[in-house]
Every structure is written in C-alpha cells, then in structure tokens.
Length: 257
Ligand code: 23J
Ligand code: MN
Image 1: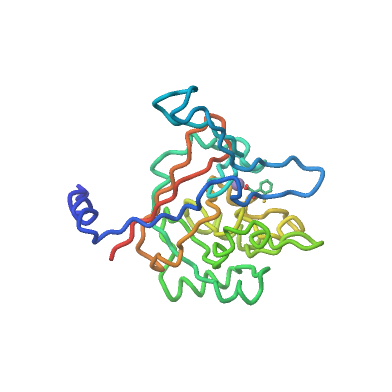
Image 2 (image 1 turned 120 degrees about the horizontal axis):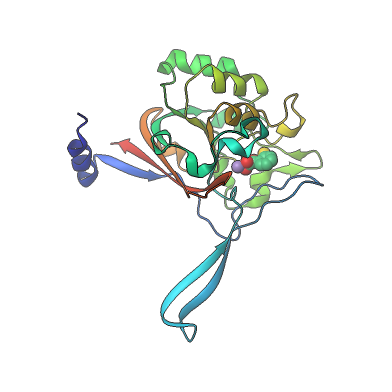
C-alpha cells in the first residue's frame, strides 16, 4: 500500500514544496487570436454581482465570462476533430490528470529563435541523458516564453506572417502521441502548437496528433524553471464542464526539496 502519511509529513515540513504552474486569470490574460474568418475565444472578465452594498450588504461575489481556452488551460481530446469521439473535459478520468513530470529545457534555443521547433532527435537525446519518458508522464516543454505572459503583444509575437512562438513539428507531435505513453504535453505558450502551426503540412500537429490519441494539452504554464528535470508530480485540475472542450485549469507541481 502506498504511504500517504510520508507525503503528508513532507508537505507539512516543507520537504515537498507545492509549485503553482498557473498564470493569473484577469482581463489582460493573453488569449489566442485566430485569423479571419474563424470564430474567436473570449478574454476572461469579472462581472460584479455585489460588494457589501445594496445589491448584497454582507457579501462580495462575481460572475465570470471566459473562453474555455483562456489562460492556463487544458485541451480535452474532443477539442480537435481527430478526437471528436474522445473525452470531453468532464469525462477525463482524474487518475489521468496527475502524473510524473519531465521537463525538456529549450530556453536557450527559443531565445535564439522564437520559431524553434522541438524535433524527435531532441527528445531522443533528452532520454539518453535522463532516461525514458515515464509512462503516464506530463511532458513539459520549457521555453522561457512565460516571461512574456504579462504582455499579450510580446506573448503572441506576431508580425504580418502571424505569430512566432516555439512548438513541435508534425513528426515530433506524432512521435510523442504514439511512441510514448504520456498523459499530455504542457507548454508555456498560448496554445500547445507553435505560432507557425497553421502553415505546417499537418496544420496544428500537436492538437491533431495528441488530442486524436487521447492525450491532453496544458498551456500558459509558469514556473517551469522551479521544477527538476525529472521527479516532480504534476496535478492538473480543469473545471468539470459537461461537454466542454477544455477549461481554465489550476496546475500544481509537487517538488522534493
Ligand atoms: C483552436 C484552433 C487553433 C488553436 C487553438 C484553438 C488553441 O491553441 C487552443 O487553445 O486549443 S492553436
Ligand atoms: Mn486550448
């Protein structure tokens, strides 16, 4: 039987730290902007109901408006046409939202080239150095992009040719989705695909292959620099939106000190 008492003691003593990988949600949180004529997602917005006033003398509360894919969020399999018969966000088994994290650090490469693409050979070299990507892992692609997260323009890094942010080409997305037994891919950027993914020979390959193979996406992660290369546990907690294609998500990592 697993020893949760040891974990409880380590949480209380601080030997296990809880790192928040979630970006703050507010009206200026970056959102994906798609080209015409596609539909657009909504920014996060609070709408005050009452604040200790005549609308509610002893209570403060809000409604909120948001897209499912706003801020740090999870992509469910049914978000993409390749996963249309797969789980909605409410049907994802909770056992598949918690798992070991591996961090693939390409901060230097992404700083030198915002269109940097992670290749299969990078993953194979990473595994040679760190061991195989474990079964049931969250694969976290660290690019340093979260440092632009409070500046939507810098975060999108768009010019007349579209956004320039790092990601995976089709061959690498297909490899991760089919040759490794992972929970999903976590990234620091606005979506799991590269800024240039619309123009790839399989458009949006991470969405296409990962969601089509019952894997998940996690986006706009922060604090990946606070995680070890291996050994952390990541917990993703999307809202249980019935029929939803994703949800803003609180993401925590448990890290041994
Ligand atoms: C719809 C179409 C393209 C993309 C996306 C959504 C996302 O990035 C998302 O948040 O799922 S690239
Ligand atoms: Mn999404």
